[in-house]
Amino acid sequence: MKVTIKDVAREAGVSVATVSRVLNDSGPVSERARRRIRETAARLRYVPDGAARSLSMRKTNTLGVLLPELYGEFFSEVIRGIDHTARRHHHHLLVSSSHSDRCEIEAALAAMRGRVDGLILMSPDMDAHTLVAPLPESFPVVLLNCATEGGAADAPTVDALTVDNYGGAYAMVRHLAGDGRRVAIITGGDENHDARERLRGFRDALRDAGAEHRAAWEIPGDFREAAGFAAAARVLALRPRPTAIFAANDAMAIGAISALREAGVRVPEDIAVGGFDDIPMAAYVSPPLSSVHVPITELGARAVERLLHALEHGNTHVRRRETLPARLVVRHSSGGGRSEGSERSALAPSAERVEPLVRSPPTRRRHGMGHG
Image 1: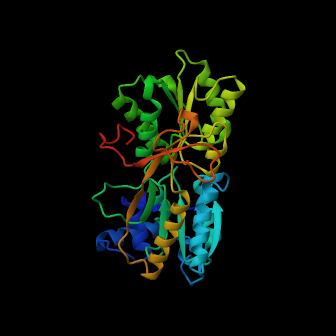
Image 2: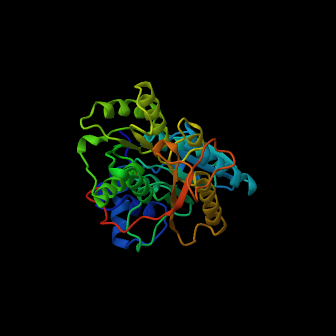
Image 3: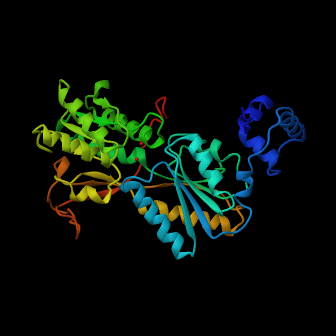
């Protein structure tokens, strides 16, 4: 079997990042640790992957983009923001998908070797820091919607952008729980950082509202329409039956509305529905979908700007973690309608009410877990 950098780190009793710094001659490492790592690498006959080293060999005016999926409105909107900003700065894109698989990510990095000047990486299902550790520290990387280690006071080691998954979910669930509704959630994957934060916001919102919460009302999903359709069928079989559904993204919410309509259940009169992301289609489904608006296109645009800033400064700049705010958009699927002070989009087919910007409320941080 091929020896990996993780094998070297384990044998030497250090982190993958430390091994990477030694083998790439970058960053401070004690001489004793440096010698032990080199001896361990030699003993295991470890050969560094040339793909990582060659990624930054020459300037290409091309940026690498690695996303979990290329399917769906969320990812197309992210790519739109990335592409528009990159072209404005006279850069091209090399885009690939990983399907949240470590081997796929490694293969994509190998395919990009020597072809890109920097990388935008979205990997909410795994530890992105481990994935980028083999890359030279001089190679710019911007993480999107990834779990990042350390608290707010810790200096980040890589640029990272995310959205306020917790605060957005909290606001949506407090809205859905109004008038004494019983709220169920259709979750995302257990390993997905966004999904975990949205589930945490769901639980805390119900607790703070004094609303009823049952474990059976947490229905697993995978961010796809079919999962929302199947989950809604499970909700209809529950007793007592929930009177509201919060889907962890809009795709599952749209699938849920389809299942409810097929079953003759009225939305929102019998069951209210809310989603997350506010993809363009959300305003045009029937009934129009209440959602947590995420600046998806802006997320992609900011990632490019951050990456270009790193390139301009030779990746010696101060790294930053930034959380983009979300806002609650109330439409008919959750009982929202035309009311005094509400706003109407020039393009949307029905009334919508846009709530003030959502900020994460003060929280009792992470109940064991710590959302598209």
